Image 1 (tube, rainbow, N blue to C red):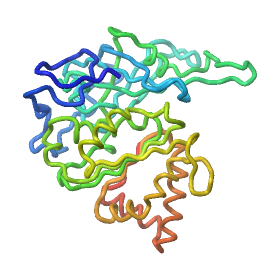
Image 2 (tube, rainbow, N blue to C red):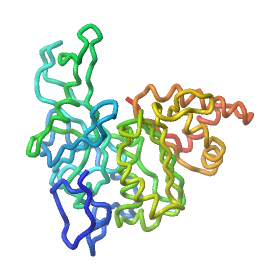
Image 3 (cartoon, rainbow, N blue to C red):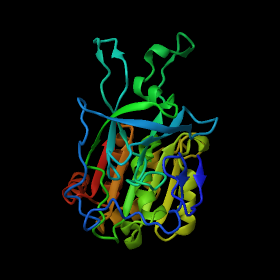
Length: 334
């Protein structure tokens, strides 16, 4: 990742990822009035029949050599014409024809991995975090190119200047409630499900936004991946942790490197369970809890939460229903 320290110049559309605002600048020019008002968020500005054409600025692999798979961070130039809010998604229309039906390839949705100001904080770019989908054929003894993910490979193979047809932004489920600056956010991600939470953290800690100036709560991030080489954006999490130890926590579940309390692999639900008492206390005090990643993460999470509820003498269904009714429960899995 090409991180840069702030200068007096905005490094717009260069593929540079800033970890602090350019000197003398504030990220306050894409805000609602008041900044936490969600009544007029951008929504479905561009649709399948009339998509926006964005240009790729950069596409870089962001995992180490021992990671299980290939994950890329892709920065797009939307020239300020496709605004979005943290927690929303873009659709990507890959070129080509679906051989199964002879029709053009359909849209694929990806959670946006940057704040509304983009990695360069100019308000002109957006980023996606994409894992290349491949299929290993045991009979062939290698990957079968005929079964690879059409859109993920299209994006991970992108080069600067590539024009990409995009739709959106879409989604309200994963928005960040900011009216109360003391709100705790508990975020649980597997793999590229980290995307929306990266947007949250940049807005709250790395940028000079109204939300950042006001925030006094705790943002607690849980990320589950296979091993250390598969960690995503660790440099950013560590820099935030160094500057804001009272307002940010990060915990990793590394399934191929760590063991849970029973001696098995450490999956995301096992890591969350370690802190179950504190998490339940914060939820009861009004914290919002988010889940993003492969849908296979949820059964394990739900089973763990049911077990914890049983130990506490609580009814799981009533507890979760209460969180949902209060708008504290946010799930986006795929």
